[in-house]
Length: 324
Image (cartoon, rainbow, N blue to C red; front, side, top):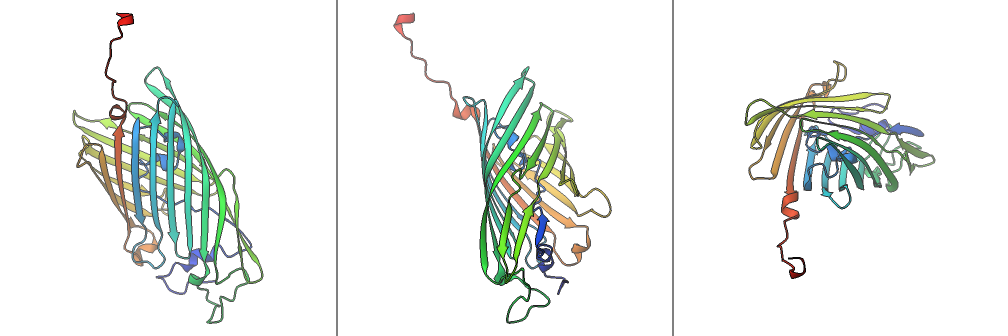
């Protein structure tokens, strides 16, 4: 099958139209250094408070069927549980294919000499997948159907479980983590005209590293690196930001590790207009051949942190005469 027009993403679905398709849908995020808990549950409770956030990514703007991803997440540090708990909801829309993921989890946090924190996290949930056959287009199709035994013009929904694990280490100047997603490796089965389309989603390992280096009293630089791999392909992001206190930061992200995989160059701006509120915006400039048919990618994140000292306030002391 071939691409009918450059401004059409149907070629992405063509990759799925085989009897056994081994695929991994891992939405990218240029803001990974500010939302590590989305990929690694070991970062639940890492900010020692209640953290709320929302993220929206509009990829390859102006290209028909372009990916659109929405993330809503929250996590909290709980002293009594010796760790953190977290929740995330993700909706990823790619043309005729849509997934909604809900995960909840827990991270056990262990302090080492009050300088290093090691955490182990796990989360689980489910993925609801929808394939809208009414949006599919095939070169051999006509007004009577798609003319493909593995495809159907019907709307089909499938459900599968999720299980993800991770480990993280945090210090005053550095944080790092390794996570592995989709341990269950469940399949989706979509019924075609006479055959069944079986989609298997492989696991992805993420390696993440970032630091915050103070230059002067109020200035810092923040380098970051993330690597995704399914042990067949590799995807990397390298970022560096420079900032003034928590008020404003400016930086750049590069996605891809060589000329063949170089995908985008992304300016990033981070502002904190109000204490404990953070707004992040980035614009990905495509460096691949897709730059001829799209207007880049927009991403915005809004975060709010309710600090622990605002939650656990010192109680009023009442003297008991029995112990005076």
